[in-house]
Image 1 (cartoon, chains in turn brown, yellow):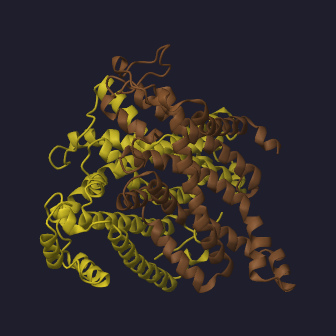
Image 2 (image 1 turned 135 degrees about the horizontal axis):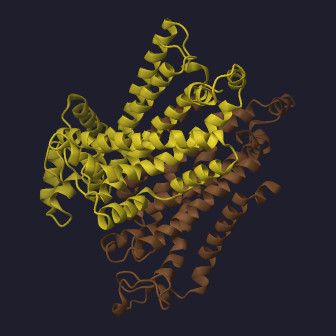
Image 3 (image 1 turned 45 degrees about the vertical axis):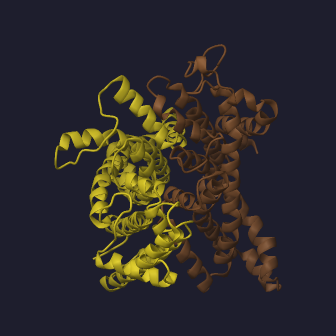
Length: 271
Length: 330
């Protein structure tokens, strides 16, 4: 456990905790009106004592919008990764554990999906289903599934060849019980690492989708949407892009650092 | 060191090599077929169809039904797919609903434009990542390593369109050195073309560089701890030769493989970056297709991108075999 308390672990873990706290607490502590109230006299105002991080094109407080946007961004990313795990885990485990033709068919499909760049797949699905919050989650979740399924399959394949699995098989353990009791617990560490890193990618993907107008739609506020709104005002008010951009960057940086440390702790082989 | 994809990519005699290549080509053909099926299926879940897009949602139901009939939209899906794939194979890719042009030439034009920024961003990324990664690996766990690794971590953590915005602000708005948007064809004015492509390529290259730096660092550190490096040093070779001639020669294969795999990532990112910079390439075209629900154009752009990604991966695999002396190809 002491590996967690390296510089990287403390900073990464700290950022992740902070972002989670903001995402959970901001909606409870900050009234919606603080973020939606328009002040037409101070549109695109720079950071000041009244508006710590400035205002956007409608004179809304950027800091509160950024804090409240955390919930949307984190929720979308978290649910999307969870969704790709729910689909990818059975696919990967079945493929890796049973092998044979099932493996061939499933992995051929996964390899085909991997030929589509994740962002392209997510954008296409979102455009097809119609962009909104739920479909953004579905789009990112589906786009990430082949990556997770591939990694999970590799891990399941490795574990399935372990002597303890052979031993368990020798005493007549059924396939179902084998997967639950021996395979799943042993493939979890690398999957947790991968899920953490996927979370970082999912936040970037949400930002990208919303930036192109094919993700979260107003009135939902997310960081990507805030960056998109800032595009026309970059000349006069660069902070409108910097505030949400920094929020994305810090969150993703924190998740990546935390993921790196998690890997060192949980998956020492790749150190 | 682990060889990519285990034993099947090794071929030691010309005979097994030809079998290997033949197998790979067959699997590429099969995957392309699957890609086309997936592309066709995904675009067919679209609420509304081509007829609706052409005539608008408010149009007269009878006229709509007539158009549907004449476009063959009432045929079973499998028949429609057959017609589409048949057209794709014979070079008739249909017409774009938005651009009112034949899709084939339209895409060929845009692929050429995007090739410019894909090549430029890959060059920028490799030129920065290899020295940086080697530097970090040579000075492992020292300040140089921390600096390089932190830079790389920052690079992967910022969305590339955010890099793009920052670059526009800095180089186009404040310094006024480079144009912030537009595309110039290299055949018209090569210098102007490169100038227009530079900022988007840099925005793409920064994120890519970060990935490749991390890869170079980890591959180089594992190679530097191997026996043959100690032997090379014991022979009295200079540190320079050991690192750049011996270690890097062995690290370059995996790094190139990752660089090749990143072409997929690049083709996802160009959708955002080209739209941001108004660079009218393949990414921009795909975005316009998606935004306007131009179904025939969506099908073709998505299919072409997936095919390009797959073929790049194949080429990288074969190149890797050509670069790494332990994998022999004729």
